[in-house]
Amino acid sequence: MCDVPFFPIFPICFQCGTDQNPCRCKVLGPTLGFCVTIVAAIVCYPASIFCGCCLTQTGKDMLGYPVTLNQKVNEVIPI
Image (cartoon, rainbow, N blue to C red; front, top):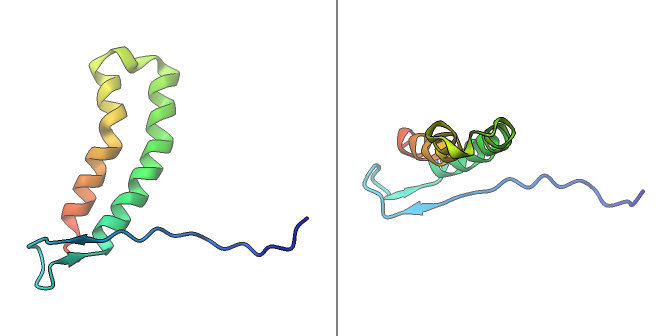
């Protein structure tokens, strides 16, 4: 085993130029949105491919759901 310590990498996303708060920058909403998107993609992409639903509209909606979820989470949190 190598002696390299484990460093957890946590992404931080910034969105500037928004009018949802006085300082016009958002950090918490985009960061949580990104993390939720990654988790949703890990679940939705294999599920849609495994089920063979890629050719139906439901399968296509399932493949696009992580992006839709990111937008919803980002807009809910104004910070």
